[in-house]
Image (cartoon, rainbow, N blue to C red; front, side):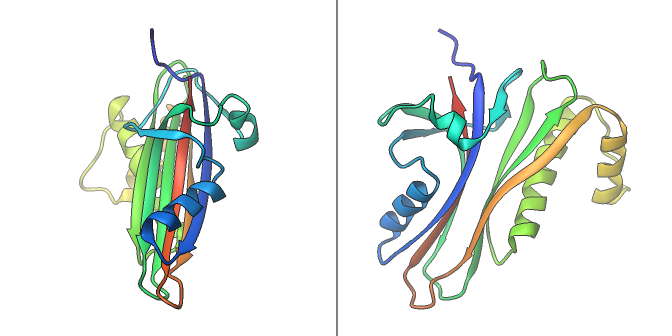
Length: 182
């Protein structure tokens, strides 16, 4: 049997509780994936894998099902500490080729900064895989511009959840996930 996902969806959530594990559970609930057995996998968007919204993706899953997931997670019990969890996605123009997902877990970054970083990671992995050169004398933005102009990268995006640590020191957890459906 080949385990090549046909469908993928993105989700995110946050949770706060006095217990670290329970705050994680609440983040999973907020993301609507707490009833699944999540197995962490590395970061490949399968060829021809259709991206659907969370509601459509959930229609293909049952409680207790083992599900492969690329998961980013960050937690803190430090009051007002900024945390973020982000999944970056880079898709090639040819959907028959695989793309890249990246996960980024951060503290002290805004959602925008964490999301941009995750997206850049995914794009760099895809670019080097499909033979686009990386020039160390160029800035990141200059390399990115060349990669986008190559016509080989179709789209990049990110899915990010951020939060500030609870003011009373309870655990706050954020997650972002790419859920792969067989």
